[in-house]
Picture 1 (cartoon, helix red, strand yellow):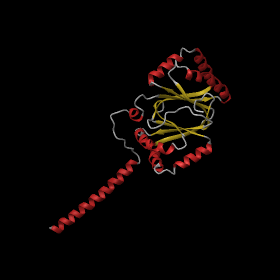
Picture 2: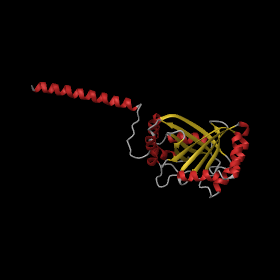
Picture 3: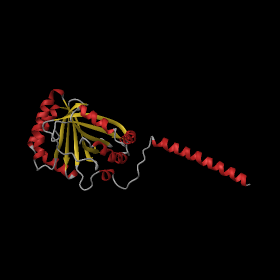
Picture 4: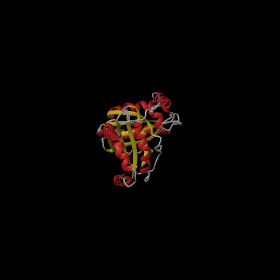
Length: 269
């Protein structure tokens, strides 16, 4: 009887071990396709931003007719800095660029609204009464092939973009994430950003609220393309960077990189 109990016990134990192994394999296999995020009782935006008073950002992508790019830049230089400098409008021009590598003949503008959506609404309302701006929009419309924009919030663990001296080139890396993975992305990058501060290359990190959703934009500054290459390679020397890359790549559906040159009007030189 004692021997039989031991045999039964051993069979059960081995069965448990097999089922446990199978469960682990099954869980691992499922984890390849389903990224689990802890359920929260708060909006993602509140968990990922600087809660005291989150700034709202607007990024604009303007695809310009190739023959009109110089004229487009000229009218932007006349109007955009004037809005930025006028305290009547509660907004700031963070940066304005032309794409060098990536989508050609494209202008990118990044605006900040301190005070969130009410500030955005106030600026839009006031600009409709600004005759120079209305005229600028009319002229601009003749020069564009297409345009789109997004409203963004900034990640709490990134620097707030501040004006910097140049000359620099800028890289805008845009990531379309799988729905439901934003918190996970934020958790990994909260650590990862520490590996990418050594040459002051980190400018800003944002995620979309309106426009393409589950979209993340990371903005970096470098002296030139070789400096970019050296800085990015150096990140791999830091213990933990490889782990961040390993775990964040499966969260991405699509990614895109633009190398951009600041225009004369840009506070980010």
